[in-house]
Length: 264
Image 1 (cartoon, rainbow, N blue to C red):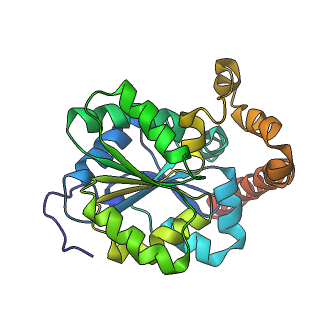
Image 2: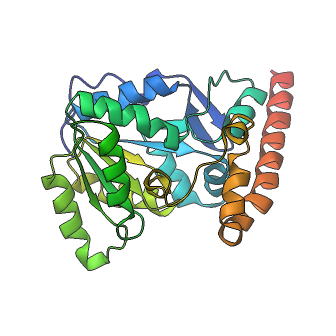
């Protein structure tokens, strides 16, 4: 990994955080995330950011390696409305949900304005490129290089070399949880791109392969239900079992916190 850069002044320990079911979530707004990531893109250290939702918290509870991969991120923002609600119920002032599908728009605009190249890695063949084409069409001057997510272990060194040679300042990795966090953990020391974001199925959404939920569902915190209706077989376990499990874990955390405060 590259040597520390004196310009990097946004160390995670300097930001307020909310612990939600074994995951520390940074108390930030979307505009702050854009500023932080753009700041990283001009540095020399490799930094990473992840979006946190109920699924991530549930996996962090049961998968020790995944919990370590999540904890290694330099920034963790509330990608799910459930995280905002849970954090507030636990006494934390988490200001807003920062859906990665919303974050990409101001981030792309800032990258175009500051001449920072992006690299998209993930999704089925052709999807990342279609997403890149649509995003570039909406942001004059934006450069994006892409590679699909179907890479064999033998071909991985060539992909890492391609990413490094691209000159990108921001890498978005869309392999889904927990694969994308594991990929970053395994290859972070080999990468020279200073800013890395894991982004799940982002490329499917911005390419138009999937249609986003109606605005009223997003405002109501029901985007998960829309996604479940689109892919019921794949997401049934995540939502129908995972959501109640998450609520139960948050409830236990609240009760434990109250008992601990009562003893202090």
